[in-house]
Amino acid sequence: MDEARYRQWRQAKLASYPRSLAEIVVGIGGLARMSATEKIAITKTCKRANMAIYRCRDKFVDGGAILAFAENFGLRRIDHHLCANDNGVAELTVAENGVRSGYVPYSSRSLSWHTDGYYNESPRSIRAVVLHCVSSAVRGGVNALLDPEMLYLQLRDENPEFITALEHPECMTIPANLDAGGEIRAAVCGPVFSYDRNGVLHMRYSARKKNIQWRDDDLLGQARDKLAEILAADNGPVFHYRLQAGEGVISNNVLHNRTSFEDTPEQKRRMYRARFLERIESS
Image (cartoon, rainbow, N blue to C red; front, side, top):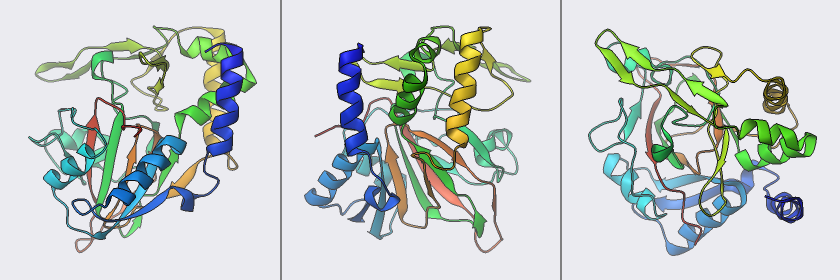
């Protein structure tokens, strides 16, 4: 994006970006009972912030309802990953054993800043995500949410060369995923910032300290430090929210994290998550 186009895009982005959490919350009849007006409201909110929090009056949910809801927004190509159910929808609950127990999303531990599927190869990049709350934890489980376009904007304003460093095709490598039986997934190398054929920004990122290999480059190190500083700021354009039963987030795979949480035998945090290979339709 050349400087003139960037300045025009930047002005429009800042003018339209929501100033409060309330601006991204949309009430709907239910996953299978959404009116045309409600669908338009979600679509418009996603155009402004690349995300919307929806709040269902009818709280019925199963994997099929998640997929049907997503299809309203052009999301059809689901990512069938290792821990997903047969229909591609994953159940995020605390797993005590089995394959899922080896991965942090299926624990009560905190999750650092990341985009979903940052370890996927480019043809399987995760462009959109639906995260739906079936039941919340007794305590904790708060998500922070940030539109990657707002992060890009702040980094570019600080130093345009930071963007160049984060666009490098060997910027970030995720080592191979191995278990006792061998290789589950090969190593994946790619940029943090990339663009689709329409010039739309895509971000893959993880703030985790382990199992990430960064390109040895001074400028990239400075860019990473600034990126971390922005994510840690108290006064940035980050939304914080604890999803309740019947609520969810639909997004163009925005940056997010999660605080640790506590379950009881009577009340356990349970989420449905579906990840897609296309973005939310803009109209």
